[in-house]
Amino acid sequence: MSSTQCKNLVVLGATGSIGDNTMDIISRHPHRFKVFAISGHSNINKLVSLCQKFSPKYVVVSNSSLYKQLLSLINTAGIKTKVLVGKQELINICQQPEVDMVIAGIVGSAGMEPVLASVKAGKDLLLANKEALVLAGELVMQAARENNANIIPLDSEHNAIYQCLPDDYIVGHTPNDLDKIILTASGGPFWDRDQSTFAQITPDQACAHPNWDMGRKISVDSATMMNKGLEIIEAHWLFKLDEAKIDVHVHPQSIIHSMVCYKDGSVLAQLGEPDMRIPISYGLGLRDRITSGANLIDLIKVGKLQFFPPNYQKFPCIALAREAIKIGGTAMAILNAVNEVSVDAFLNKQISFSAIANINQQIMQQADITAIESVQQLIALDDEIRHLTEQEIKKKVSIHA
Ligand code: NDP
Ligand code: MG
Image: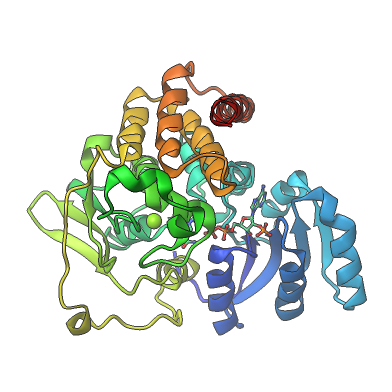
């Protein structure tokens, strides 16, 4: 599977935190990787400086209203990169014949169609955008099987599991000789905090993760522990496992990134600094280990590694995710949509931190769950649940005004 031939990359979400880490590794291996295209949504200044540094053939700005501004900045700077705009170009660029690998670093359901397009074109997909899998796991995995596309998880937990499976393991199959997997969780910034004070938590407090430096949406998900719920769903699709085979251990040190428990009683774990360049470099190397810039862990300094069971009562979002897997069909897509809107409302100071889980629970109970039929159905459902959630939030805000 691995090869040292120079790879043409599309980096989706190049302006974000996954984007930063990916571009950092690419810059360390100029003979190994060539940037074919990058994308961003709002940060056009960063797109310009990335074009200056990496000279991609194309830059895609998904937010159409920024096209002219970006074009003018690129022209003024004398950069040769061609500027493309909008969602359809994001999809097209992933399917170009020159492309070897797509790095999916967009946040939220906006990443679903480019992810599906990459897999349908049989590209190597390095997947950070967990929401795409939560929303459309069934369709993505089916398309991967049909088109022999290789999916490599970048999420640190799933990448750790992937590293602990045999080298010939292909994502989408239940691993041989496996008893269960254990996803580790840092517990987020409020693991020890008294639940009665959750309503007073501010967006900045929720985004101050103790161990990882990430985008704002995933940081809030870590604080509610919905992130672990989404990751259980992600693992369910990637490794074809029942929810009951996916355990969670809270491990506040974030040194063991996850574990595979085999039938003979052996447990394999992947350890390392909490630095996303480690899983991303393993993906970019297609299982070859290439330098990532991350420091080697000093276990003597770390001293102790602790493990605790998750508190489902304090963090009900994990249980919601387990329930959504058991129900199946569109339940996971609904959970993803309501959560994206409630997190956004919290970040915009419309609702309290504790309201995120309440709204997620309420909409899950209200919504009609059906079988998954098509991408169009999922796009329409995503819109519908977003609208429903926004209406519920408006009602709550007007009651409290
Ligand atoms: P960031 O918020 O830092 O970056 C998000 C990226 O997506 C940016 O490039 C942003 O563009 C782009 N984007 C935002 N909205 C849209 C849209 N509507 N259409 C197209 N592009 C859009 O997030 P992260 O990098 O932290 O996370 C990215 C994904 O990776 C998430 O799914 C997250 O769960 C997952 N992940 C992240 C980890 C991390 O360490 N950060 C760890 C594990 C998983 P712009 O900034 O220009 O607006
Ligand atoms: Mg993770």
